[in-house]
Length: 216
Image (cartoon, rainbow, N blue to C red; front, side, top):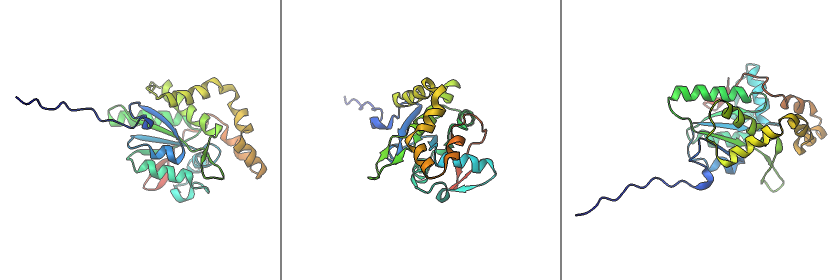
């Protein structure tokens, strides 16, 4: 008598963090590790996603090609959209609004929602993603807000990002202003953008990518 082979569960690459509901990774490389997700939150606090939140709040619709001069955020958003995920822009200003939007999306789907949060980071002179503390805080703030709403089955990477934001919450504004990226912006004559980006939970607008365009 021949015994039918037992079906084996699929094996997922460990760096994809697939077994967790909330995942966290960095840059274009991290986005490329994602094979599937329901929702993808892109975080670029001192560049694209804070600007996106402001422009969409003002009633604009923003095409992918117009969201950042450097191109990383658009590339990441495009990669994530290609997985079938609904891509949204997150920052400190709308982190709770993003979490509420995810809760609503989960209710709409009628099942547990798979979420990936990608911190864009900075490209160095060798075109490698550099750790950017402002994006760590922004991503951690979104992940913490999700946890406060009961979505807390997080990967270790996501849990560490949330803990970084929670543990340094009272100093996040100062640390963001003192970051390397903020100093670069100040030298370029754009210090006002840093002050705007460090505000927390002041916006209810969630920019959502739809047909290559971000809109509220």
